[in-house]
Image 1 (spheres, rainbow, N blue to C red):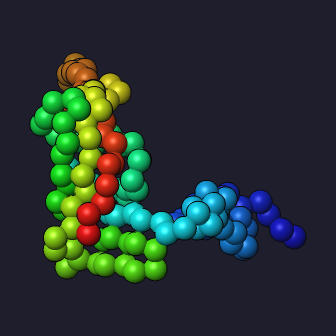
Image 2: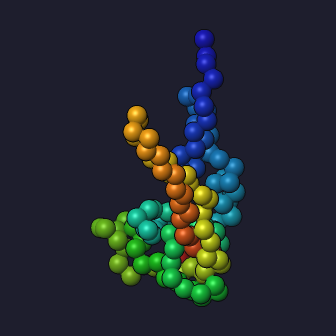
Length: 138
């Protein structure tokens, strides 16, 4: 008897049950030509970026409209050629444009100690920078 298995997306492959299928987005980009992407580290997190992608990073100082270079590039893939850094790829950088300085959703922090009448509720909103990836220089 076959059971329904949740769908998992891992690196361009859609796993449904025991069968793997390429995702349509990756098929289209492979048909268009060479796919360029990089893995960058910013704010202690790693992001997979492509030219034209928009993402929110930890706060980066700068004005809206200015360009920022992300120098901690861990991997660069240009079609079939993949360069892996140890720990970073030398000479590689990702140029991005700052779209907005925003704040994330509010997170409630609630502390208490049982039987001691101690209750403390505070909140936190992370400061973020929304950027558009302009180009990947390898």
